[in-house]
Length: 174
Image 1 (cartoon, helix red, strand yellow):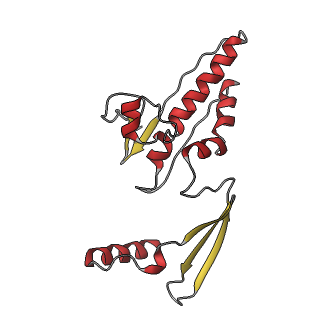
Image 2 (cartoon, rainbow, N blue to C red):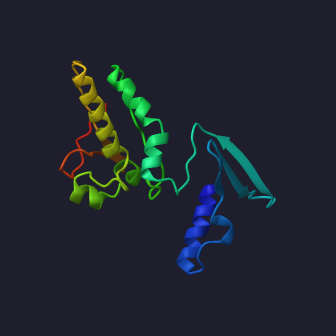
Image 3 (tube, one colour):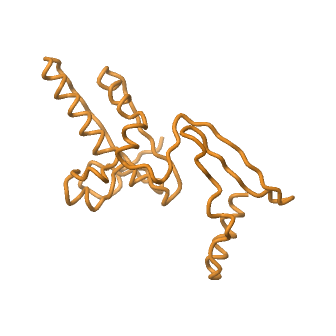
């Protein structure tokens, strides 16, 4: 159904008709841990509503700071300081906000060197939090060693987000 609906939207956009009114909001955050998806049955036309539960649900109005504070990444960083490995994985369709969520506004990141408290994404916030935790541990006399990678997979190519190089990394398939 989603592919058919997407093609219809694209057809209407090409024809200049715009988006159908019933497609503007079919997903609603109904609580801090639930989403409601409503759609029209493709055969009988009846509206169907389904609710899905998650650990956390945040809407498009959530600030970068609030997202960082509530998404659980601080706890994840704490576990890495205890010796565990951790992965943060952002997944979604093109234009859904993955890069903004992870990096923040790229222009400001490049110009301000990660110093934009309003728009910093998870990567700069995580690094700041991690280094604050390392500093506190070192003040207590603890020895800390870290290594990290921030990678983006886009169109089957891998990019190192901490590198100044903009070219894809070589990938070996086995």
